[in-house]
Image (tube, helix red, strand yellow):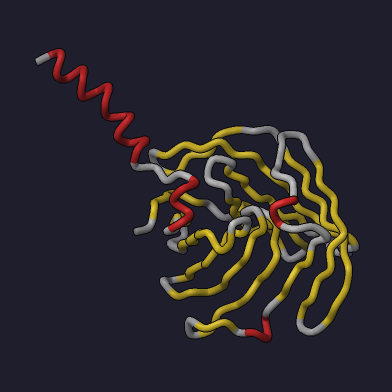
Length: 195
């Protein structure tokens, strides 16, 4: 009896880990839930781009395209489940998504991009500053995480976004936003692979 109990105890962590999503699950999708009840679903859009669909109260609110799962390349608000093209913002980088660097602890990536927003076209400098690698948990699932601070110039508001880059999944999510309007924190509490 003791040996059986010991065997079950040893196998339980392995079974729990097997249930945690991996980067391969981006093919069908990975769903996160926030402490406020919203959900965010990530899936492979192209070979080097990840799509994020954010749901508020079960209703699709926005879609974001992330080059290499990190760099914002498109933002679009959804209305009645359909894209509201008047809200579309695009961010053009001077290199292909596959050539963009992945975050490394202590690294800085600064890049000049072209933004198209509400018909206006302008340039800005995006600055991504990576912190030290740590670990983040969603329920029983633990992942390596590199915090990435995002700023852009010129920016009179001195806004800052804190992204959590998960190298084992190949995606990032917005953890905190700081601006003159206040601070918003997003707490993700669970994760699951979608069918």
